[in-house]
Image (tube, rainbow over all chains, first blue to last red; front, side, top):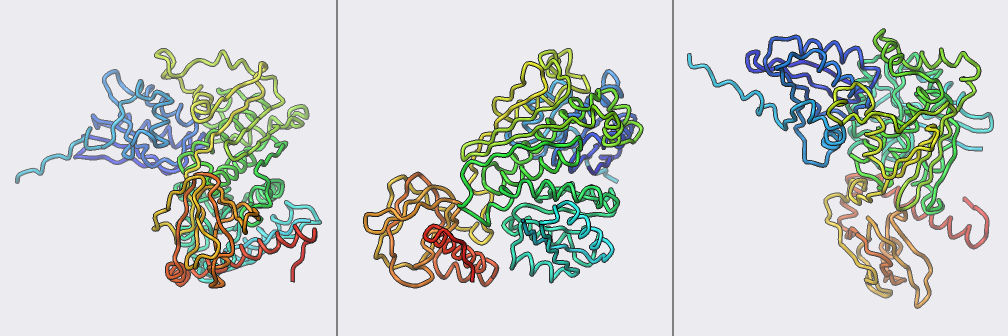
Length: 121
Length: 435
């Protein structure tokens, strides 16, 4: 698993990107980064699953658990799946696990964090 | 006795020695491992192209062999490495990078300190499953139904190795597509892990979480459990049957079982925030007819084959549009001029000389009409489609151009012809002969 957090649009959005195989033994890194994401100031928070090769049920459960434990009542966490075509592995995973109950699913970061207009100096 | 010829691609001499030793350790004394060490990129690429080995050991920490460039070549043409790659690396960072390469047929990633422990296990697994791993080489000699019954020790590496090997096999034999491969590997991983961790070793979800939160690893927890001789003796009984239409799997552990009916539905409104309980749900969704026995220590499931004809095909033919044929179509007629060959994407084809059926060919035979194509005479047999199918028609010019770009395909054709002659010899003399 590779994991990184990107702050976008002058701090208005934070995106945690996961790639590769996300499995139980990644638990510590996963937790640390989710806590960092959720504890940050960015009002929009997202987890990008587009490029995961595979996620096991333990790791998926941990994402749900840590996000839910850390978020405030009014925080929406988005799951980003840029390659969603209704039939991909991630699509099926979202569907099967009914992640829509827990997260808002979007196919593009632009939908949640439109690029800030260029400042007119 | 089995002879394994395995290219060992690394510029680290000490690692080469350690891998060779570990490969031998995993086999019985009557087996032979012939390793072919290579320490440059050009040498390795040449070997992969010319020999098309089923299996290779690649050291991804050896910069000199440009391992990622080699891997790109393999991903671009999966025919080069049919069974897969045992990947070696120095560190967790390297391992993570390999994890990201979802298209590669990697059987297992082994770090330097794990070589002695893990490689013999992988070789043991490969040996006991060689009937499926080396299918391309022996082609039609393999029966269409393949089955095996295996006892697995309580070892997560072994379960992951099985999941990857079988996923690679189903994918490279066109039984599942790339997404299907990911889903299948996930299901196998979930169910075999459940059988070892929860079934045989009785590890609870909370115990697993505590271990992981200490940055520990589950294998250590399993080893601790296995200091109890009763637990250590338990095995996972794993069976599979692969037919043309589907693959069936049966995984049984020797634990006390569990009440699968009582597992809460993690998709219900009240349970959707639960941190666990999704494994069975995911496995059920990605397979056909998953069921548990009454006691809850045996699970069976089926994977329907989707036959995605396009997913694995020799790289040189990918740009040519296949021709669709229907059952009863005459593909080639005895006496016709032959200036093309067919690559069989799918379907079954009857070979008739006069009115006599002399053979039936299918995807596993790869080519149709190669004899008269090569010998430049008229077709010596009529070919009739026995089922609907797809064929790629390759003209002599296209074939020659392709071979100029990728010369190893000439060798592949030569091998196929040699195999057919050998089969013919065995069928007519009952003996194997090789001169």
